[in-house]
Image 1 (cartoon, helix red, strand yellow):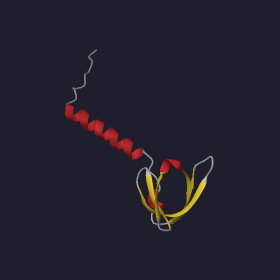
Image 2: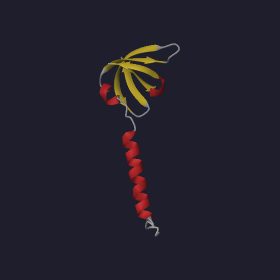
Image 3: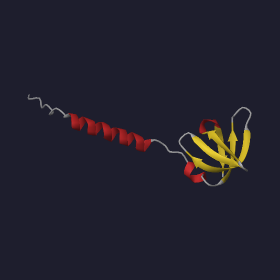
Image 4: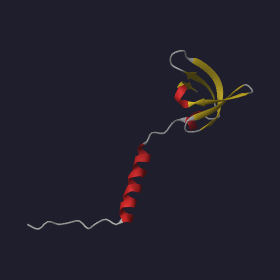
Length: 87
């Protein structure tokens, strides 16, 4: 019985396959909903043990931070400490 051997992959083919796998992995990652509440007046609940409630306007959102304004004050909130946001 003859055994068929596959041709060796070139470096470019390996790199392309790796890029394709990374691209598919990135496509599967869940996004956040920041784009839905930027520019809107929202209620943000911070902290689980002793929750604080902020009524503010979301000015800008990045991956880890929200820039909000309360009156004339600007506050930057880390998303890790946000329990919920109600629009």
